[in-house]
Length: 254
Image 1 (cartoon, helix red, strand yellow):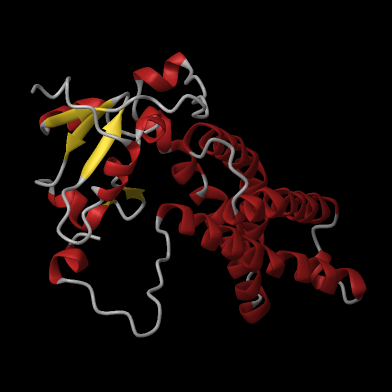
Image 2 (tube, rainbow, N blue to C red; image 1 turned 60 degrees about the vertical axis):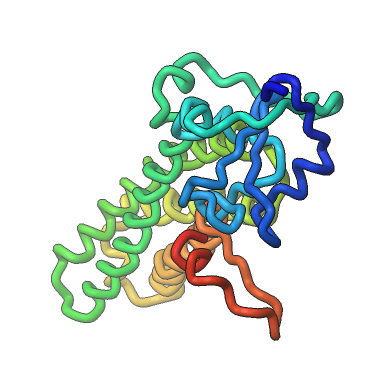
Protein backbone atom coordinates (compact mmCIF):
# COMPACT_ATOMS: atom_id res chain seq x y z
CA UNK A 1 0.00 0.00 0.00
CA UNK A 2 1.37 3.41 -1.00
CA UNK A 3 1.56 6.33 1.41
CA UNK A 4 -1.28 8.05 -0.44
CA UNK A 5 -3.51 5.02 0.19
CA UNK A 6 -2.69 4.62 3.89
CA UNK A 7 -5.33 6.63 5.74
CA UNK A 8 -4.31 7.53 9.29
CA UNK A 9 -6.99 8.41 11.81
CA UNK A 10 -6.83 11.44 14.08
CA UNK A 11 -6.53 9.10 17.07
CA UNK A 12 -3.58 7.24 15.56
CA UNK A 13 -1.88 10.50 14.63
CA UNK A 14 -2.27 11.82 18.17
CA UNK A 15 -0.57 8.71 19.56
CA UNK A 16 2.45 9.16 17.29
CA UNK A 17 3.90 11.92 19.44
CA UNK A 18 7.28 10.41 20.29
CA UNK A 19 6.27 9.25 23.76
CA UNK A 20 6.56 5.67 24.99
CA UNK A 21 8.63 4.59 22.01
CA UNK A 22 6.01 5.74 19.49
CA UNK A 23 7.15 7.28 16.20
CA UNK A 24 6.96 11.03 15.66
CA UNK A 25 4.35 12.00 13.07
CA UNK A 26 3.17 15.42 11.94
CA UNK A 27 0.49 16.29 9.41
CA UNK A 28 0.42 19.06 6.84
CA UNK A 29 -2.33 19.73 4.32
CA UNK A 30 -3.68 16.19 4.58
CA UNK A 31 -0.32 14.41 4.39
CA UNK A 32 1.36 12.69 7.33
CA UNK A 33 5.15 12.67 7.65
CA UNK A 34 7.41 10.59 9.88
CA UNK A 35 9.99 12.98 11.37
CA UNK A 36 11.37 10.50 13.90
CA UNK A 37 14.83 10.76 12.33
CA UNK A 38 15.05 14.51 12.90
CA UNK A 39 17.10 15.57 15.92
CA UNK A 40 14.99 18.75 16.00
CA UNK A 41 11.91 16.67 16.87
CA UNK A 42 13.45 14.63 19.70
CA UNK A 43 10.87 14.06 22.42
CA UNK A 44 8.02 15.03 20.10
CA UNK A 45 8.69 18.79 20.25
CA UNK A 46 10.18 21.21 17.76
CA UNK A 47 11.82 24.41 19.04
CA UNK A 48 10.13 23.75 22.38
CA UNK A 49 6.76 24.91 21.03
CA UNK A 50 5.43 22.74 18.18
CA UNK A 51 4.08 19.35 19.25
CA UNK A 52 4.04 16.16 17.20
CA UNK A 53 0.94 14.07 16.73
CA UNK A 54 -1.15 16.83 15.16
CA UNK A 55 -1.85 18.99 12.13
CA UNK A 56 0.80 21.69 11.63
CA UNK A 57 -0.82 23.34 8.60
CA UNK A 58 -1.56 26.56 10.50
CA UNK A 59 1.93 26.74 11.97
CA UNK A 60 3.59 26.30 8.57
CA UNK A 61 1.55 29.15 7.12
CA UNK A 62 3.63 31.56 9.17
CA UNK A 63 6.87 29.62 9.74
CA UNK A 64 10.21 31.14 8.69
CA UNK A 65 10.79 28.14 6.41
CA UNK A 66 8.58 26.44 3.83
CA UNK A 67 7.05 23.00 3.70
CA UNK A 68 10.01 21.59 1.75
CA UNK A 69 11.67 20.77 5.07
CA UNK A 70 8.90 18.25 5.73
CA UNK A 71 9.24 16.68 2.32
CA UNK A 72 12.73 15.54 3.26
CA UNK A 73 11.10 12.94 5.49
CA UNK A 74 9.02 9.93 4.43
CA UNK A 75 5.31 10.41 3.91
CA UNK A 76 3.59 7.55 5.74
CA UNK A 77 -0.03 8.27 4.93
CA UNK A 78 -2.80 10.76 4.47
CA UNK A 79 -5.36 12.16 6.83
CA UNK A 80 -8.66 13.84 6.10
CA UNK A 81 -8.75 17.54 6.90
CA UNK A 82 -10.83 18.45 9.92
CA UNK A 83 -14.09 19.84 8.46
CA UNK A 84 -14.45 22.63 11.02
CA UNK A 85 -10.80 23.51 11.30
CA UNK A 86 -10.35 27.25 11.75
CA UNK A 87 -9.31 28.82 8.47
CA UNK A 88 -5.87 30.32 8.51
CA UNK A 89 -5.61 34.04 7.68
CA UNK A 90 -4.40 34.81 4.19
CA UNK A 91 -0.83 36.06 4.30
CA UNK A 92 -0.17 39.27 2.34
CA UNK A 93 1.88 38.69 -0.80
CA UNK A 94 4.91 40.48 0.65
CA UNK A 95 4.96 38.12 3.64
CA UNK A 96 4.72 35.10 1.35
CA UNK A 97 7.68 36.26 -0.74
CA UNK A 98 9.99 37.20 2.14
CA UNK A 99 10.12 34.48 4.85
CA UNK A 100 11.95 36.86 7.21
CA UNK A 101 8.85 39.05 7.40
CA UNK A 102 6.54 36.17 8.39
CA UNK A 103 7.76 35.93 11.95
CA UNK A 104 10.70 38.15 12.74
CA UNK A 105 9.73 41.86 12.33
CA UNK A 106 8.17 42.12 15.77
CA UNK A 107 11.00 40.41 17.70
CA UNK A 108 13.39 42.82 15.95
CA UNK A 109 11.27 45.96 16.33
CA UNK A 110 10.42 45.35 19.97
CA UNK A 111 14.05 45.68 21.04
CA UNK A 112 14.09 49.39 20.23
CA UNK A 113 11.45 50.60 22.73
CA UNK A 114 12.88 48.22 25.33
CA UNK A 115 16.41 49.58 24.97
CA UNK A 116 15.38 53.23 24.71
CA UNK A 117 13.08 53.00 27.73
CA UNK A 118 15.71 51.38 29.93
CA UNK A 119 18.35 53.82 28.66
CA UNK A 120 16.09 56.80 29.46
CA UNK A 121 15.82 55.57 33.04
CA UNK A 122 19.52 54.80 33.31
CA UNK A 123 20.73 58.16 32.03
CA UNK A 124 18.35 60.04 34.33
CA UNK A 125 19.84 58.16 37.28
CA UNK A 126 23.35 58.94 36.03
CA UNK A 127 22.42 62.63 35.80
CA UNK A 128 21.08 62.63 39.34
CA UNK A 129 24.24 60.89 40.55
CA UNK A 130 26.87 62.95 38.72
CA UNK A 131 25.08 66.12 37.60
CA UNK A 132 26.44 66.09 34.05
CA UNK A 133 23.85 67.61 31.71
CA UNK A 134 24.90 65.32 28.89
CA UNK A 135 23.33 62.37 30.74
CA UNK A 136 20.01 64.21 31.10
CA UNK A 137 20.03 65.22 27.43
CA UNK A 138 20.71 61.64 26.37
CA UNK A 139 17.75 60.49 28.47
CA UNK A 140 15.57 63.06 26.71
CA UNK A 141 16.68 61.79 23.29
CA UNK A 142 15.95 58.21 24.35
CA UNK A 143 12.44 59.22 25.39
CA UNK A 144 11.80 60.62 21.93
CA UNK A 145 13.23 57.59 20.14
CA UNK A 146 11.23 55.25 22.37
CA UNK A 147 8.02 57.16 21.63
CA UNK A 148 8.71 56.78 17.89
CA UNK A 149 9.55 53.07 17.91
CA UNK A 150 6.86 51.88 20.32
CA UNK A 151 4.02 52.26 17.75
CA UNK A 152 6.19 50.36 15.24
CA UNK A 153 6.60 47.51 17.72
CA UNK A 154 2.87 47.56 18.47
CA UNK A 155 1.97 47.40 14.76
CA UNK A 156 4.35 44.53 14.00
CA UNK A 157 3.12 42.83 17.17
CA UNK A 158 -0.44 42.96 15.89
CA UNK A 159 0.56 41.27 12.63
CA UNK A 160 2.53 38.61 14.52
CA UNK A 161 -0.51 37.98 16.72
CA UNK A 162 -2.77 37.77 13.67
CA UNK A 163 -0.68 35.59 11.38
CA UNK A 164 1.37 33.54 13.85
CA UNK A 165 -1.05 33.12 16.75
CA UNK A 166 -4.39 33.38 14.91
CA UNK A 167 -5.45 36.21 17.25
CA UNK A 168 -5.80 33.84 20.20
CA UNK A 169 -6.48 35.58 23.51
CA UNK A 170 -3.68 34.06 25.58
CA UNK A 171 -2.26 35.66 28.73
CA UNK A 172 1.02 37.00 27.28
CA UNK A 173 -0.88 38.64 24.42
CA UNK A 174 -3.43 40.20 26.79
CA UNK A 175 -0.64 41.62 28.95
CA UNK A 176 1.26 43.02 25.96
CA UNK A 177 -1.87 44.53 24.40
CA UNK A 178 -2.78 46.15 27.72
CA UNK A 179 0.60 47.55 28.72
CA UNK A 180 2.03 48.62 25.36
CA UNK A 181 -0.32 51.64 25.02
CA UNK A 182 0.62 52.61 28.59
CA UNK A 183 4.29 52.43 27.65
CA UNK A 184 3.73 54.68 24.65
CA UNK A 185 1.70 57.13 26.76
CA UNK A 186 4.44 57.20 29.41
CA UNK A 187 7.18 57.81 26.83
CA UNK A 188 5.23 60.49 24.99
CA UNK A 189 4.23 62.26 28.21
CA UNK A 190 7.80 62.36 29.54
CA UNK A 191 9.18 63.53 26.20
CA UNK A 192 6.63 66.34 25.78
CA UNK A 193 6.97 67.38 29.43
CA UNK A 194 10.77 67.54 29.21
CA UNK A 195 10.51 69.40 25.88
CA UNK A 196 8.25 72.02 27.44
CA UNK A 197 10.29 72.30 30.65
CA UNK A 198 14.01 71.50 30.06
CA UNK A 199 14.79 72.12 33.75
CA UNK A 200 12.12 69.81 35.15
CA UNK A 201 14.70 67.68 36.99
CA UNK A 202 16.42 70.76 38.43
CA UNK A 203 13.28 72.38 39.79
CA UNK A 204 12.31 71.20 43.29
CA UNK A 205 8.68 70.32 43.79
CA UNK A 206 5.98 67.78 43.05
CA UNK A 207 6.45 68.03 39.28
CA UNK A 208 10.07 66.93 39.51
CA UNK A 209 9.21 63.80 41.48
CA UNK A 210 6.24 62.95 39.27
CA UNK A 211 8.39 63.26 36.15
CA UNK A 212 11.10 61.14 37.74
CA UNK A 213 8.53 58.50 38.73
CA UNK A 214 7.22 58.30 35.17
CA UNK A 215 10.74 57.87 33.76
CA UNK A 216 11.61 55.19 36.33
CA UNK A 217 8.32 53.43 35.55
CA UNK A 218 9.44 52.89 31.96
CA UNK A 219 11.86 50.17 32.99
CA UNK A 220 9.18 48.40 35.00
CA UNK A 221 6.74 48.50 32.09
CA UNK A 222 9.16 47.16 29.48
CA UNK A 223 10.38 44.48 31.89
CA UNK A 224 6.86 43.12 32.33
CA UNK A 225 6.04 43.41 28.62
CA UNK A 226 9.34 41.82 27.64
CA UNK A 227 9.01 38.96 30.10
CA UNK A 228 5.57 37.98 28.87
CA UNK A 229 6.66 38.43 25.29
CA UNK A 230 9.58 36.08 25.86
CA UNK A 231 7.22 33.37 27.11
CA UNK A 232 5.72 33.26 23.61
CA UNK A 233 9.10 32.53 22.00
CA UNK A 234 10.60 30.58 24.89
CA UNK A 235 7.72 28.90 26.73
CA UNK A 236 8.29 27.91 30.34
CA UNK A 237 7.59 24.21 30.85
CA UNK A 238 7.56 23.31 34.53
CA UNK A 239 7.71 19.65 35.42
CA UNK A 240 5.40 18.48 38.22
CA UNK A 241 7.06 17.70 41.53
CA UNK A 242 8.27 14.13 41.70
CA UNK A 243 8.25 13.57 37.94
CA UNK A 244 11.12 11.48 36.54
CA UNK A 245 14.09 13.29 34.94
CA UNK A 246 14.19 13.72 31.18
CA UNK A 247 16.46 11.59 29.07
CA UNK A 248 19.76 13.06 27.95
CA UNK A 249 18.45 13.35 24.39
CA UNK A 250 15.47 15.37 25.51
CA UNK A 251 17.73 17.70 27.50
CA UNK A 252 19.87 18.33 24.46
CA UNK A 253 16.96 18.69 22.04
CA UNK A 254 13.82 19.88 23.96
